[in-house]
Length: 420
Ligand SMILES: *Cc1c(COP(=O)(O)O)cnc(C)c1O
Image 1 (spheres, rainbow, N blue to C red):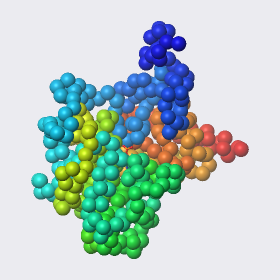
Image 2: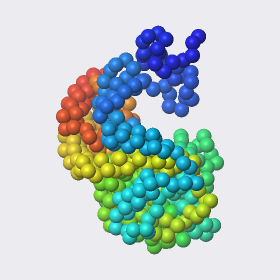
Image 3: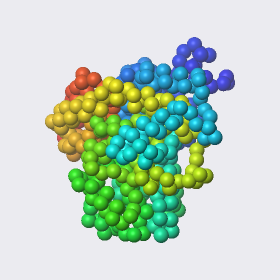
């Protein structure tokens, strides 16, 4: 047998979905199951698979490709940086790293004085949360062994972030996990007050729980969380990995949901690099100085190529008014989607939407399959919920096309499920 080829050049013909899937199953660890489709190309909000089928990508790599696929601003920034200086390690810094840290600190903590907020650059969301967890451990040390997290929380898959993640199926195969984490009911201020004490280092939360099905914390909870943590001397850590970087129509979801609240620590990743892997842990005030020399590190974190991508994302969102665009399209689209028969509830903000399906349409996973066959990529974070997290550059026409196709699919499913 000849060596496996990425192009299928030997046969003079590119491999199809079926060939790639067979090779995947043989070569890639089975952590996801074999994906149904093999994507080979993307442009704007569209992607194409190995059989030539075209899709409108309303998931964007799970809230990652905020500027769509192959955006020229990211392509240019990454190409120029990589052909100038691609990697230096943390023995050195680069203009891209310093500039990104300054811009991120400013857009995350817009009302704190310059120099009071600091950034640790990592490569992913889970790593951003690992750094946040280490900051929490450094806060109060042995006097504050407890950390509070919310039921339904998802904070990542590495051991520390997994300790903060609620779902038993993710946690239990890997126990024992780092200790001291307790889960309290999400959105229940009285339960939080009850659990809080002088031995708590931090409360960790997502302003909108993405993996739990796009579930927003109730109005007033973030304010209560800030007040309760402050009174007990605990840190408030806000995980904006999915909700941050403009996804909800503001740079950070907590800016939109609780404009008066300033967390001690904020984590971001997903949309930050527009598809290039990068994460960041931001801290303000005394929390910004809790990690000292030698206490944390990463070889790739803060590398200039990822930083250049993130700077291009921030610059494009700012210059093209995409925060306003996300807010306006999100309001219009969620109103439209709420009136689709079979959609019981529309949750979320901006372009992070969870569509709660009515009982009569069947499992959300089956609706996802119908939508993919009709050329729209979405996913089902829960058996009763579809998640939309499209690129910010989605047009009204493509959003409307999805609404129309979803309406047809749910009507058909209501008829057939009802007939069973
Ligand atoms: C995706 C996600 C993470 C983990 O990010 P990775 O880059 O997959 O490690 C953490 N927190 C939240 C809220 C997320 O949505």
